[in-house]
Image (cartoon, rainbow, N blue to C red; front, side):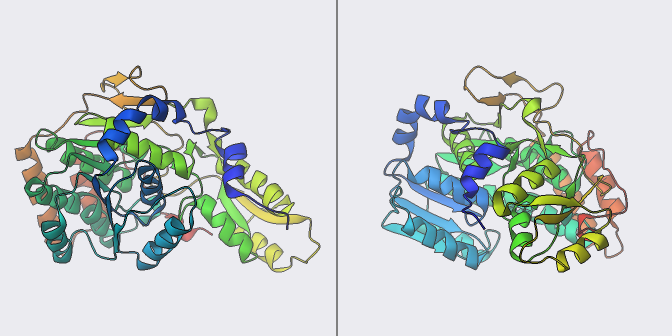
Length: 405
């Protein structure tokens, strides 16, 4: 196999950018970023994931004095620490502590009370996959993590207020068609309701190329195991690199104003299909041509028969038929006021509709009551969420991504 650089592949074949999309914005706001970060303390929740760890790498460019990282993924925290300490371009603060704890638990509350307040708090802990939507159990866990724990965190922070608080959202929160996107829209409603008491921002953004657990990341795993590649052929997505994802969130967190939702200025012609990326990946990673298979079984059998001199690699491309799968991406909805002038490559949603604190309490009471009912099903939860989010048009096909290769 020839030498393969994932960063170079992303730049050439996925984002088609030689430099960061946000290079100009980072340069413009460099002085403010240094003023607000240098010598300050930061707490990053969900920091072992792709976006959280990329945020940390972007943050460390500006010299914070303290960095605490919380994540339930103990192995991920270990790799994060190894990576940070192995890089020549970053300096890890002397006061650096990675904690494998749940940000919704009592241990986290004790840590925050004893070690806070922090100047910067960023929350990346989330259920982020559409595939996580399966049944009442998976949806309850998703809503608990993305919404209920987010509210609990905000209540804790009221006692230890940071100068900047950021909570990541998703493009799928705009006109959501799946429960993951709807749960993130609910999260937006929650944090915006607190934006008059804390300085709060969030960001909707594109797919992060080769992020942990993503379909593109799975291409590497499949090739290492000699397994076929599989992807939809009809789904187009915007992409940013992992580094760009961290920079976007850092700009939103530090430079954004309270109550704002930030998104990348990407054009429709920049969207890519997963299948076209798979074809480029096969050529660049292993010097293969794709062998197009008509079924999962044919693809599996072809992969099992691969020899050391094979020049073709089996792929199975298909039309999307799974629940909650949106054919295109959008970052804002009709009626939201958009500012495209303040940043070079970021748009800002300035007047996103927000619920009152009273409306939120009613919403949370109904959610908690529903989850106490042992006889509820997925449809009942979807109906309740639709009452909170009128533009939530759930796509239900009866099939989930877990039923595909």
